[in-house]
Amino acid sequence: SDLHKTPLVSPRVKPEQLMRLAHWLASYQPADLFDDGGRAKGELADAIAEARWCSFAPAEAPRSGRPTMAPSARAATFTDAVTGVVRRHAAREDFLLVSPDELASNRLPALADEQWAYELLAEEVLLEWLAGWTASGRRGVLVSYEAFAPLLTSGLV
Image (tube, rainbow, N blue to C red; front, side, top):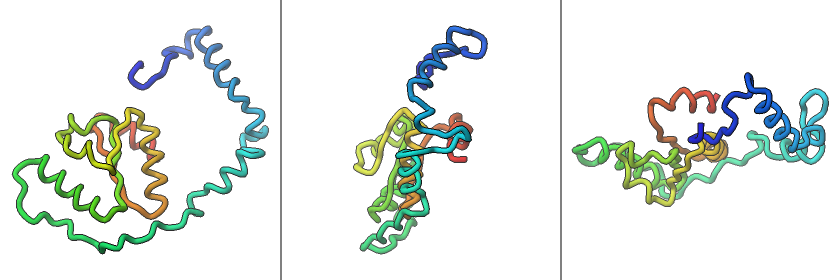
């Protein structure tokens, strides 16, 4: 689909699309990157070894302490309640909110302007940002539609 930028819609049944896909993949020169067993080699292997998740040092604990997450007053709307809770989490300065361009449509438009909130219509990129962020000991949340949950769950797995 155009939304998720997949230009080849039927490579399994259309030989010309399969050839275009093969040509595009070959342009990455996989033989220079991977051995016959599919393992990274050379500089790619070095970079992967250096970036192993377990090698990240935990983020330094924020100096402000751990704020209470309980709202000080009962929120009148969904928007008020969620916005308040998210902002209290963000006050610790170790928080990231990512969303595939859906904060306004999820009734959270006020969060879109925060310095710790990012909207990008590329779920795979958001998942990687969030994975790197949380792997270093920080906290984050991904806001999306219920209909996209299976897609996002498969990305998390």
